[in-house]
Each structure stands twice: as structure tokens, then as C-alpha cells.
Image (cartoon, rainbow over all chains, first blue to last red; front, side, top):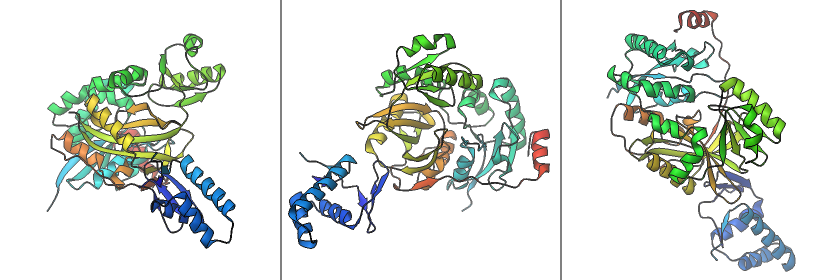
Length: 82
Length: 348
């Protein structure tokens, strides 16, 4: 699973999908997750990084990362390789 | 190097809530790199704003409405040609295309070039012929039926589910959720544009448009897809963004190849929840948002002019995506003397 390779994300968290013309705004953590997806990091790797960086617990991180990825999938921003 | 000079006549100078393509076409022609354009505006009414835009339009002449007949139009064009020595005419209204297509051979013999769809292409893409068009060219279109009399509405509605899109022959479309709304839309649109009225299956989804240019031999010379971002209550894009959807570009190339489309066009499409595209309408002319195509690198009016002159045009293969157009309206202050002149003399 990766973010579609034509998706552009700016430092300010502005996400643009050139195929559909849709644009979104994400907060800094959302931008960080998208960046890691672009680097082809797995959900587990992303969750581990979040857990290291932020003062939170594994259950919350797992739930939040999965929720965010579901939302990206809903807006057709990610490609599933399976 | 000085550029050659061309005199190009352009219609569609209006700018009501459904603006004509004339002014943006002229803006594109003024930015052409292959020629210097002297612009002759062709107007139907004295309040078309393009008439008064003297930095874009060098001179304007009224022309008769299509309902006055082809011969009347021809006489008027002959007069204008005598004054101005026209090289090219670019008609921009659906309702006038038929007359100009019919006149094209006479115009050519006078030295006036055009680049329009053939009469057959124009006819087969008419809204009422869309189902057959889709079948013939393997393009997905919504179910639709032409209705010639109010007495037939109930019978024809049996084939549709609500809501139904009620469309005029050339312009106007309304979404109707019950029989009464269908009847009311039928009456109001037919009073303005005549019959048939077209009933069309309602497709829920996102609207996309593509403008492009076909060379008449099956090649796509230009194509720019746009997603409407701001839509007026007339369904017109007041803001839009150039996109890169490969499926849309493929569909456009398929349309041009299949039909051997000649001239400018606009495809109106709807993408449903399953990401399938439905071709809703084919407009046989350049659309009012054409300047977006110019802004992203494809000057379609310039390429169309060169094709009209019989010249070879290298197809545009790229454009910038992520560029938007945002429309603005502008109040001009016009001297009454100018309005008087175009109203009484038919030229300004």
C-alpha cells in the first residue's frame, strides 16, 4: 500500500490530486504520515515512528493511523498493491 | 520578425450568466505566436459586452439570428467580407453552427476559412441522438429520449426513474424530481428553445469537462480536461482546475479517433461513484472556459485557425496541471453614442 505517486503535498499540509483535481488540507501529523507512505513505509513502521515521537500509547496510535489511512483510501489517495 | 496579419471574425461576444466563448477565444487569438490577429466581432444583440471591448475587438458587425435563414446570414457575411477581407470565421454558438456548416463551401470560395465539424458529425452528436452515438462509438452515455409533445411525457417517463434531467435542444437543463416538475421544465424550456426536449437519466457524481481539437482525420491536436470547482445555478463552471486523469484523455482520444472529429469541441462528462465516466453532452465548438487551456499551454483557437487555413499543426502533447481558472465579471462604462451606433447602424 502506497500513496498514489502523483499526489503532491506541500509543507503546509496542502494535498493535491492532479488526476481528479481534488485538494485537501491535513494537519502536521497527517502530513508526516503521508510523507512516510510516500517513502513506502508500512503501517507498522509508521505506528512505531509515531509512538517514538509522540507521548501516546500503542492502541491509540494504531487506531488513529488506521483511521487516517481509511480516510485516504476513501478519497482514493492510496493504491493497494494486493 | 514581423508576424503575418490575419483577419478573424468571432461570434459569441455575450456574457450573461451563461457567457459566450467569443471573448476568451479572442483573448487566445491575440496571444497567438503564429500570427497577429485583427478581430472582427459578429454580434446578435447590442448589449453583447465584447462589442465594447475595443482592446480585443477591432470592429463589430451585427449578424442576423439563425431563424432569419441561411441566405440572410450569407448576404450579411458577404457585406462584412467586402469591408474587412476576412481570412477565418470562428463560430461559437451551438445554435448558429448548422448555418455556418452549410455555408462553409461558399465561404471558402470567397476566401473565408472555417474549421468546423461536418454536417454528419454535428447531427449525430445532437442530444437527442446521444444513445445511438454511444452505441455506435462504444462510449458510455446516460439513457435519454427526445420528447416532442407534452402529451407524451407520462408515457416516456415510464422508462425513467426520478430524478430526471430535462434538457433543451441547445441550452438549458433542469433536474426534475416528480411529474409536475418535469411538466413545468418541459414547458419553460420548450417555450424558449422549441422541441424536442430531451429526458435524460440522472447520473450522480462529479462533473468534468474536456476541451479539445480534432484534425478531421482522427488525430487529437489538443485536449485539456478540467474539473468544475465552482458551479453556477445554470450549471456553468465559474472556477475550474486542469487535471491529468489518464482515463479522461484516453476517452477523448477515442472520441476524436472514432468520429474523426473536425474542429473544436467540449465533452461534458460525469464520473459516478464507481469511477466510471458517462458522456453527457458533446458541444460542437470551443467552450467559454477555453482560456484555461491557453493558460496551461494549449492555444486551441490558434491551432484551429491554422488548421482552417490548411496548415499543418503539431499536436499538443503536454499541458501544466494544477492550474485553475477563476472567472470574474467586469462592469464597463460605455458611452451611449456607441450603443446608439451598433443599435442603429449594426456596426461599431
